[in-house]
Structure formats: structure tokens, C-alpha cells
Image (cartoon, rainbow, N blue to C red; front, side):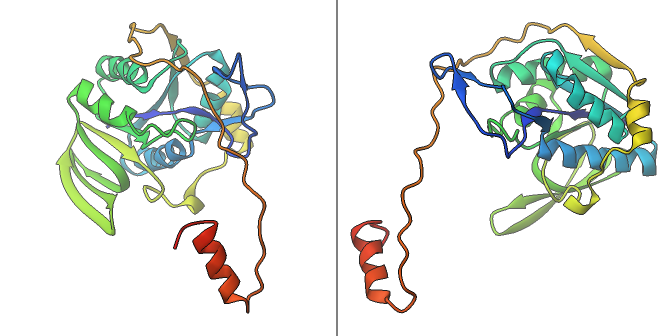
Length: 248
């Protein structure tokens, strides 16, 4: 089984977010980038398939050279090789088009991608990728087993989980539950050393064009002052919720 894991290069969630150029560009100064957490769950699950079922695991990113340290970290976790599509995308459709070309050229059976990236939270790339490749698709996946070409997967729905059967080829939009957080892997020194020698292929984009463009970014308004109410003063609490917060 050939597995492709899509890796997004995203800011660490503790980063301070600022914008430049009249609020039209993200300011990367001082920002630490990491593997998108949803993709990291998928990568760990792919490693399970590699070790238990002999799968091969390739990782792919659509982005500039600055994303390569993130790809090397994924290689240190255990992926076999990496592909970087050499373009800085501006929307999800452009990413999906470039990934679709990689999938079609590579003959992959299973594509694992986080259900969304932690920076834009668009939740669009896995579904569009499945459509462009004509692969089966399960989003919000919290469990997956593969037996030959038969797949049993569980996805999260409102109020519970739903178990589905399908077949390869397949695109999965994964999240926590595909593996548990305690099972995520931290690269060890041997993995880091081996990752330096693993293939990282840089390919040129096929020319997938973006369909949207950013007009401006805007941060949420600062939180207001906090009012403390004595635990015994229920009347004041109700008055504040009714007259100021207007939630009751």
C-alpha cells in the first residue's frame, strides 16, 4: 500500500499573530512553525500502517523552501521520502490542484490529510482533493483499518461516531482519534540523523490557480475588562447577564 500524507507548515499555536503591508500579509517574524497537528495524527497512523502492514509512506507539502525543516521533522518521525511542490499557494483550491497532480503521478492508494490546517481552518483541501482525483472520501475520521483494498473507518458526527465501509483508493480527512495524542511520536536522535539522508524531491507546480485572494486580515477585538461577582450575589450576576451581556 502506497500512502501519501499531506503536511501543512503552520505557526505554533502559541505564536503571536501580526500582519504587515496594511494588514494584507501574515508577519512571520519571530514565529515558530510546526507540523499541522491534524496532519501529525495522520502521519502517526501512516507509520502504524508502515510497521504493521508494510506500507510505504511519502509526505508532501505545497510551499516554499522555508517549509523544508517541517518536512525533515516528518521524515525524522519515520516517513520514507518527501515531496515539496515549489509554490506558495494562496488558497485551498490551489493546494488541492497541486496535491491532485502528485497523487495521480505517484499512484497512491491512500491519502491521509488533516481535516483542516490550524492556521486558516478552511476544511476544504481533503474534499477537493478527493473530487479532483475521483477517490473515495471520509472526513472527520477518528479511526481507520485497511484489509487489502477494503477499508473500515469511523468518523465523528454530531452526538457520536459513525462507522463506514469503503475501499481504496481513498482520501481521509483525519483528526485526533485516528491515533490518540499519547501515541504521537517525537523524533529521536537516530531519526533526525537518518532524515538528513532521506530523499526530499522538489517539483515545480502544475499551475493550479487560486480562485480567491486576500483583501485584508483583521484580529479579533481585545477582550474587555472582567467583572468579578461575589458567589452569594446572584441578583447582581443575573442583572449583569441580562442588562450588559444580554445573554438572558
